[in-house]
Image (cartoon, rainbow, N blue to C red; front, side, top):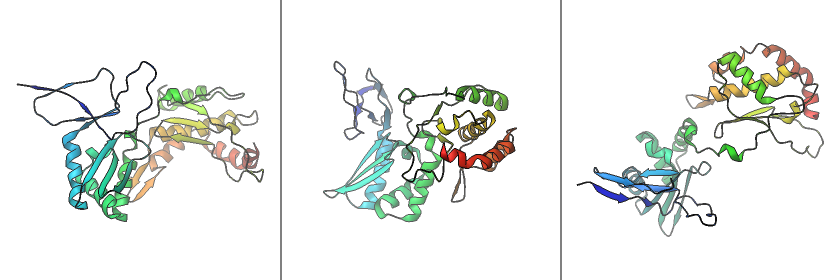
Length: 277
């Protein structure tokens, strides 16, 4: 006989947003009890995260054995507080991102050593695992990110699509937008400028508005966009204990940009002008 069981909400899941008038609050995480004949009756509105209770308990036991005391382990989908812990009234309370439930035993042992003992080597192992699994971090819905692609002088989307089609044979591109204009420093002059960035958690390319000038050539804007597009296509690689933001394949592809050397020369000649823009 199969057992039908309603899923039970995790009592200490991540905070829930306030429900609008007339809406029912839904939990953000559910524990799934371990049973061979379980039939799950899902709620009408889908939660953000499902947690296998047997896997969670197995990891919790690792903490209990190392801590030699009571442990309360919570699994979240929080992309900011990936690992947090503290001792309250003799209870070790640990909150972990769900990526650690499927981590190999070596990483789970390091996680326990980091939380319970504060081991530096274990901390590095945990950090490497988080970096390698950044794709599992919940992304902010794109509808909350204002995308402004049309500038006064350059259309970012048009340039991006042209690069993707011309170099990779596809018009499937990540979102792109002009970044926010920041106030000048107190000295009145910038010492550095970040012309472009790629957010791997949101998969969004941002371009500095200083490039939206009539005197900035289109090929230079394209070079900056091409660089950030490569970050989208070729994530950072790990070599030993080093994390390479620009692995060899990335650099080789970047040199394939037809205006690569010309763009570098233009940047060197106009850097001071960009800093004033």
